Image (cartoon, rainbow, N blue to C red; front, side):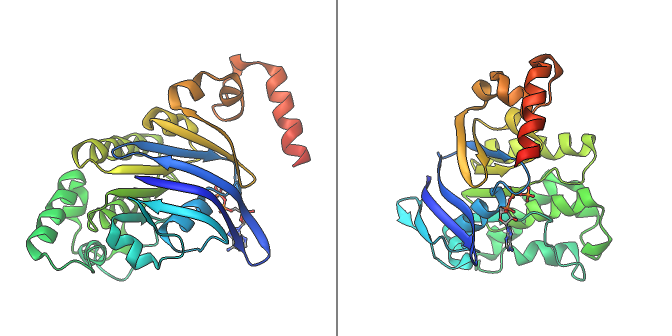
Length: 253
Ligand code: ATP
């Protein structure tokens, strides 16, 4: 469905992505893990058209969409839930959701998708006429995911949906993300710092370090790897030697 092929993306003179390739199959959940600054957000921005890659291709359903404008990418079926949610605080919850459907002309379909969102997140139905800025962090994340759903995506790009949420809310929101994937047959590319939940949710994972993919495998296999357990899952039984190596690596990078 999506093939990212050797992309290189810059912020002015700074190269953030150094030849990243990844695939997402229809209906699959794929995660991208990595430390702060590894380039995860930049990969999503390059796919959704917010940034243009200097080199490489982004092929979605057979079409090269690299360098396409974000609204065109969205119309093809890729909806991006950005880090920090980027909602409109002075608009109501309902108006925020409708912004996600602004390119659609099928009024009946939009109305039924609004109901779909309220079904997944009943809190949004209760708060639909309130200003979005008054919502809690968890409710804002629900609204940001729902706004993307209003674009009827084939592929959802989720950037750090767990950011700033309590462990209980993280569990709830990831439960809904799994339901959306299964019930709506929406493929998901998930960027997360919470490797525990990301590896339990996704089918396949890529590990990014300093703009490069250093590991790619099925999540079950990744979870069983000693280095992943040490560095990303922080599991003590993986050994103090590994932790020392990791601390040293962090100090030197
Ligand atoms: P985080 O989890 O902290 O968001 P990330 O893995 O998503 O990290 P990116 O935000 O993609 O990483 O950043 C990749 C690199 O690009 C980093 O070195 C970062 O400092 C740099 N970078 C990100 N945004 C900009 C920007 N607007 N201008 C210049 N450099 C940037």
